[in-house]
Image (cartoon, rainbow, N blue to C red):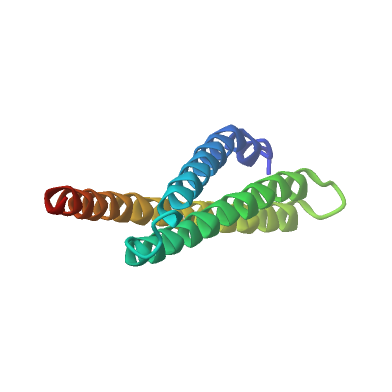
Length: 134
């Protein structure tokens, strides 16, 4: 594979996704800590946020594994110990696995984002109802 560097060039983009996903997880943890003060009031909301945290964790793990596969693909593709055809096919297969995992992780982030909006709306509605009762 002449273009062994192709999977390596994707790494900065994946790195940005990892950083943004980490920031989302930190933000979600802070939100949950605040809601834990009134756990009895927001129990259902906390359960939903825990599911969201799990989704973020799975997505982030997918990004890490995808990164490892991209690097491995580049390494396998550049190795001279194999015949040219074998090296190309193994490198391509590993690259394909990395890209598929990257896609799955992105789909998880899309699901997370849609659910996050719904959860925030539910939380705001619940807070408005409580304010009206007081």
